[in-house]
Image (cartoon, rainbow, N blue to C red):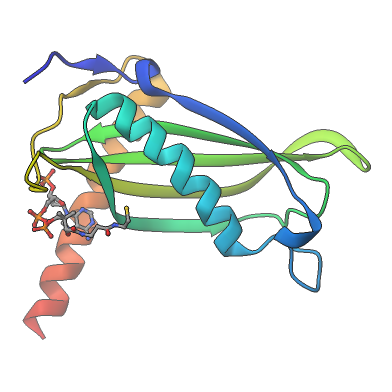
Length: 161
Ligand SMILES: CC(C)(COP(=O)(O)OP(=O)(O)OC[C@H]1O[C@@H](n2cnc3c(N)ncnc32)[C@H](O)[C@@H]1OP(=O)(O)O)[C@@H](O)C(=O)NCCC(=O)NCCS
């Protein structure tokens, strides 16, 4: 197993601009378009941390706070929140500015994606651990554990029915 890495070593920030083909009839960006941008940024962060093939296993708590309309410049931030064993959680935040209205950034969306690292045979394989350094990184690390525990509890409850 390779050495642990810091959160900063794999943090990703990508940019995009909303085009007319990315929105619905009400000029709100398609959720699926946003998910594609999120998945790409999250995958780069997960891949950079794990340094091996990763695949998305789940997407949780996607929340759209504000609509992004044509011309909105999107900044997508992806950061590995926590490594478990063969999986890791990436936290995502999208901030948007609409230059024709205001350069004031607004939070557009949050999401959490879990990736599993795969070995040469396509089987889950352990991932190097992560070192949260800042107050925010430590908070996100702890919150990722709470989300995982809640998911496992919900799965157990549903399976018991
Ligand atoms: C990823 C895959 C190989 C995992 O195999 P699996 O046998 O189902 O998974 P396992 O039970 O061995 O669990 C693997 C890891 O996923 C985690 N996991 C399982 N279900 C999960 C869920 N719903 N959410 C988050 N993590 C989950 C497990 O906790 C484990 O992580 P850990 O070792 O850190 O505890 C398999 O599910 C798969 O191929 N899925 C399709 C992937 C795909 O096509 N993605 C979309 C395109 S990238």
